[in-house]
Each structure stands twice: as C-alpha cells, then as structure tokens.
Image (cartoon, rainbow, N blue to C red; front, side, top):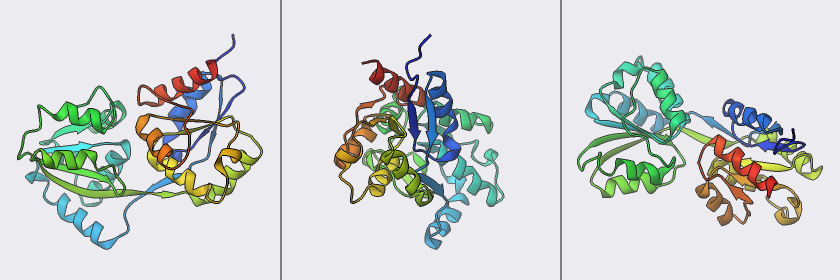
Length: 262
C-alpha cells in the first residue's frame, strides 16, 4: 500500500530534543525525516536577566496564576526552579494555563494540574480561553522566551491583569548546521522543509542571506505548523506552500500529506 510521503525526504528544522515526535510521524506516512536543527535553546546569560529570574522565583507565593506557552518554557522554568532548591510543589497553589496538549502533559508529569487549555493552540486561542477566567487584578507569572510575540502579554495587561514577565530561555541560531543545510538544498537532497515556529523561519532566512531564495529553493516545498509561522515567513519574503490547520506535529504532517496528495 502506497503511503502519502513515500519517497519524500522531509527536513526537520526544530531543536534536536524536540525532533523525535515529528520524525516518527513522518516515518508513519512513508517519508524519511532529515534532522537539521536551525535553532537551539539556551538559558539567558545576561546577569540582569538572571538576577530578575532569581528575584521572581523567590516570590512565587505572591502569584495566583502561571502561564506556559511552550514545552521549552516548562522545561527551562523547572530547571531554574531546581537550581534554586525548589520543586513543582512550590507552585502547586497556582492555577495554570497552557497553550496546548504537549505543554499540559509535561505539567501533569510533574504532578501539577492544568486549569486552562484552549481548543486552538496559539496565543489567540489562549487569550480567548482565559477571557472569562482571568479577572482584572489577577497576579500572573509569565515565564517566557527572550523573543516572544507581544499579543498575549500586551492583551492581558490591557485587560488589567497584574502580569510579571520573566525571561527563562532564548533561542539562538545553530550555526554549526549551516553548511549541512546548504548542501541539502544545493543537491536537492530534501523534498520539503518544515517550520515549527517563527524562530525556525527567521534563522532559516538568515542562513540563506545573499542567495536568490526563489531560485535556490525551487522545487522544495515549505510547510509550517500554522498561520502565525506562515505569516512570519511571508514578511521575510518566503512563500509557504502549506500550513497545518491544527497547530500540532500531527497537523503539520497532515498538511504535508495533503500537499503531496494534491
């Protein structure tokens, strides 16, 4: 029986520790995953950021809510918490809001409950889910990446929420994979490239600086995890061929399958 991605080599651009799920889904559909991480996540090195983080984590009893908008945010938050002698029990009094099921799963694995998760797994969906629950004056902790869309925090502040933002990680380009990326593109060793975040698109474009992207990428399909990532690509002059309707790895692979089916 022929599978939708038979004979297709699909490039995965996300960080190595997050690539396994997408790779497995691609294999299930007959494709061959090729992992070339364009980004890596690191703890913020800036001393002022580290100081602010330490101060905030010493005041956890002053918050009512905590919001996580990625699995990276969960992992780095608890890493920093552990370094300061604290455990998940130290935030068990907080109500939690998460952007999607993978983030929720990580919290539950740490013995914590999830109070709010949207049906649409993005900032817009999370805002809508919080609309009736999060009241003005609520004290909310938002551990986040250094680079973040401002829609969620600015909208919450406009609503009157007492929001404390703290940077717990940042995304940087994985420069060591730049030449590998170019070799795969030049030799047409991949049929499609997937983007799972705006960061992967931004660093992809930076790696192709100086090239005529339309000519250089001719014949290679570009697929994103959702419209926000697709819009980022569009602003940077990159045309996305398809994006997921459900903003998950499963949705991304379904978009790939539909693209080749059509």
